[in-house]
Length: 457
Image (cartoon, rainbow, N blue to C red; front, side):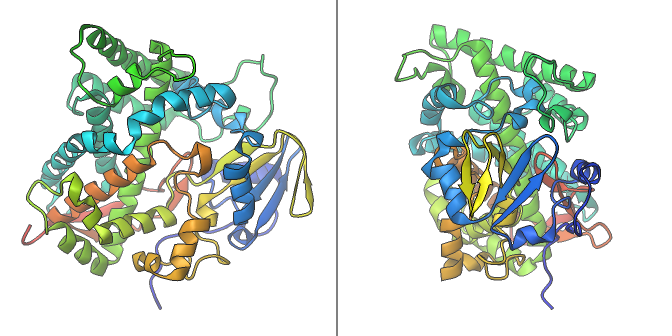
């Protein structure tokens, strides 16, 4: 029997709201019933709200692509994240969100990716060097290492500073503490309190968020001063901070920029770290694919591929793409119905939560062949190509598609190639990985691998 990658168990049958919330707090994924891997739509009712999980591709397209303004991002999402993210592009809606995207998007266009690529590769070189001290065959928790390199990429591309910079290092450490203190389920995210009522957050959560935002404010204020005197480096922060909104001609103020940097760090760091860690784990589970990735990556020089070479890493790209299918870093997205709707002959009231689940859609039994199997070769098949078109959205889709999607694909493929060309990764049988999801998908007890130098590297 073919060995399948780890997948969390589903809950059995119906449960009470109290039981569901307990399961949800422990893990979003295993709190859901197995039928969601087959259903086109499922309804969930509570005394406080109604929720509709939509898997049918036509419904997903309706919400994300055809009528996105009628399904704004749910305010429930922002409740637990407000202390850190403020009014960032991740949580805003309507005209405010559109203005933010008009300013941010130009920084992530194709030509800009070429410009920041050397900074990405420098972070990869640093990661390869750091991993040398771990490459003795001793079991290592790999998410800690992928988190480090993902943070390094963010700081190098955004502010032209390495993770070793004092402020960058402090942001990284405080963010790790923030992750430990941030509750998985904030009660305000589940119960529609009046807007005037203060939202409950842990004291430590608010403290770490304030420290992070203070440090980011230092970086942002320093950059604004450099822009004024003409000494600012040509990186992502400078591009964003000097891009005027084509509608009103205004640029981000310091506080607005701090909000955006906070979400770049949260989304760009945590999601990239998760995807890279799972990619390494899958290659350890399937050494034949690891050998193919290594052979492809070793075709380039000791510093790794150049930007022009990225299109030649077809195998690495398919491995990373398959990783994102099986372990989408953000497993669920929540929208809200701005008006009454009718989905699949059911009335959906105004204010209902519309849940779109990359986790379930990308493993859907009625869409994908062998949906739980690791098979990077599937994308060369008609089924795989059809799935990519209709049921693949690790970065969301439509007008709210992640602005850094292209950035993330270049980063993930590059770092995976650089690490696998230098080292061999093996599973630790006594410490198997099991995915759980809170805000993002990560290993329940970490992702443990044995690392050794690769012969011929």
